Length: 102
Image (cartoon, rainbow, N blue to C red; front, side):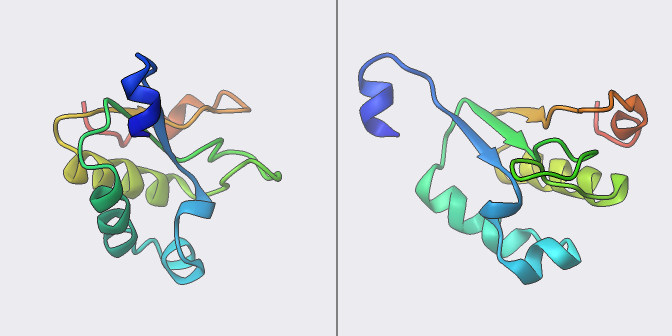
C-alpha cells in the first residue's frame, strides 16, 4: 500500500467476502474485521464495500440487500474521511442502492 502511494498510485481497499471471517460474513457482524483492516489501512482514499453483491461467483460476494447496506454503513463509520464505493452490480438491480446513506 505505502509502496504504491509512494509512486503516485492510489490503491483502493476492496472489502469482499474474503476480507471477513466466515462467521462475520455469515452473520453480518463486520465491526471486528473492519477494525483489523482499519489498523492496516487507516486512511485509504477509496474503500469499496462489497463486490457484486447481487451475483454468485468466484469473485462475487453475494449478500442480501440488508447485509449489503449494513456493510456500506459499517465502512462509512470505519473510514468517515474516505470515499466509500458500493460494490459493482452484475444484474444492475438498483434497489440495492435504496437503503444506502446519501
